[in-house]
Amino acid sequence: DGGITQSPKYLFRKEGQNVTLSCEQNLNHDAMYWYRQDPGQGLRLIYYSQIVNDFQKGDIAEGYSVSREKKESFPLTVTSAQKNPTAFYLCASRPTGGPSNTGELFFGEGSRLTVL
Amino acid sequence: SQQGEEDPQALSIQEGENATMNCSYKTSINNLQWYRQNSGRGLVHLILIRSNEREKHSGRLRVTLDTSKKSSSLLITASRAADTASYFCALTHPIIQGAQKLVFGQGTRLTINP
Image (cartoon, rainbow over all chains, first blue to last red; front, side, top):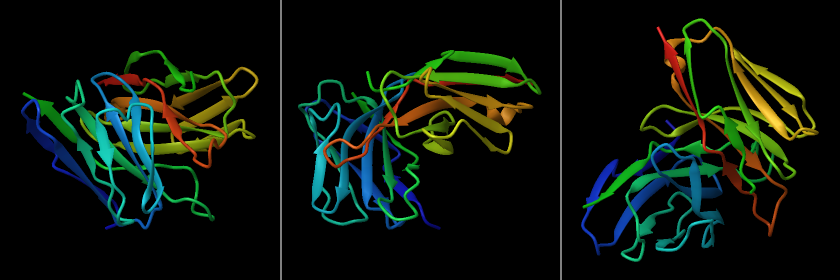
């Protein structure tokens, strides 16, 4: 089945460690996004990518890094520079251009990161 | 702010009643979308309404958009316990710097009591 797969679902990290969250999609979507969600809050955009080998900072990019070497993959690294990394991280994708571009985002099931 | 603001923040009703959630915004939009999120899960797209549309239906969902008041409402009719979730409005603003971003509100937490 087509969809977006995030892994791991749960992750614990010690302070000072970098961690990488995986996001893979087989929907053939061009655009991919990373959002952060804190308890009882909405989603805030971390990074997004419209095309392979290109990405832009969102509203809260400090302390995070991404890469987009393949169309299917958009991993997010939470670095030790992120002051408060404990949160729920959501990856999403969307087709761009053409009749399939409805603007709808397709989400993964999320990764919950806890810093100990 | 570019994001929408949902109202109420939380809503609790009895099964079978209708649930109405509102979303207000401040800047011009291309379209407005509603998403649903079950606890601890990803978001699921429910419905999209374009800026030149006034009302759309999808099953038990009805969405309205009033661009003069910069507001939208989501109505869920004949609610069921399975409708318990958080509901988010998301705005697409005119393209800036070649990119189209979706900006999410804070959400309405809906609880349907059996």
